[in-house]
Length: 125
Image (cartoon, rainbow, N blue to C red; front, top):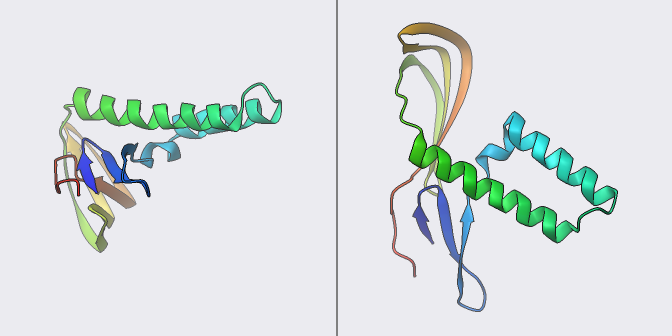
């Protein structure tokens, strides 16, 4: 397995590599709307399930690339760490009473942060 810019290169059973982008952003309002629209098009038989899958995979790739290359905003935050986990090169943090600062300040009661490594972490086998 090989991680690079929010994507994973995976070897299939035939020994060929293919790239799979993280699907974190399918859980955003934009991702949910896209999935609902694609499901409606499948149900009305306007597109095939295979085309729908291709649309979602392109969305995954495009949003990961855009956020990786275009987003440069920075902010700081401080809170109380509730739990953390590291699995498959992905960190997950749950924090309580978190204050975010970027000029203005906002406080939230609880937040879950999922962070994937965007750098090369392992060579492809």
